[in-house]
Image (tube, rainbow, N blue to C red; front, side):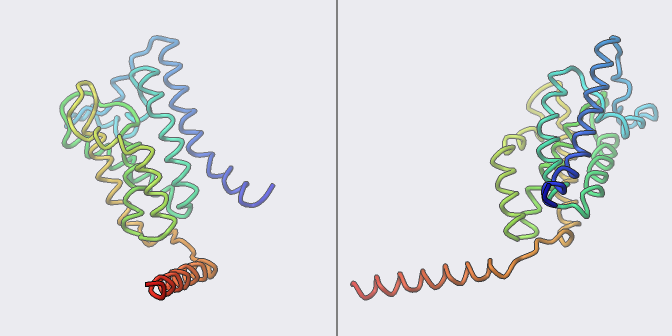
Length: 215
C-alpha cells in the first residue's frame, strides 16, 4: 500500500468513529425508547450546560441523524486530509465554541444534533479558500460550495423545529477558524506548477502574436 493511501486511510478514522458513535447512541435510544433531549443545550440554564459537550451527539430521530452523517464524513475527511496539522484543533474549536454561543444567545429551547458542527466544517473549508488564496484551498472551497452550497439557507430562521442558531454560530465560528489557521498546513507549491504557468503564458503570447499578424 502506498504512503498516500495509508495517509488517507489514517485520516478516515476520526470522522468514521464519530459517525459510528452518534449512530450507536441513536440506535440505543430508539431500541430502549430513551428520551435524551435533556442532554441538549438549554440556553442560559445551568442544567443546559451539559449540552455544550453532549448536544451534537443527540438526534431527534434517524432522519435527523442521517442528514448529518454524510456531510460530517465528507467535510470531516476533507479537513483531516488536507489540513492534517491543525485538523484536531479546528474541529475542537468549532465543536466547543459553536455550542457555547448557542447556550449564550439561542432561544430557550433544547438544541440537539450535529448540524452546527456540519456548518462549521463547511464554513471553514469554504473560507479557507478565500483567506489562503492557494490553488488547493480554492479548489476545495469551490467543491464545497458546489456540493453543500444549499446549506447557507439554514442559517436563517426559515423552518420551524430547526436550530438555525446552531447553524449560524457554527458558520461564524468556521469563518473565524479559517482566518485564524490561514497560515497553517500551507499548500506546497511545486516547481512544475510554475513551469506550467509560464508555458501557458508563453502559449497565450504566441497565439496573440499570430492573431495580430493575420489582421
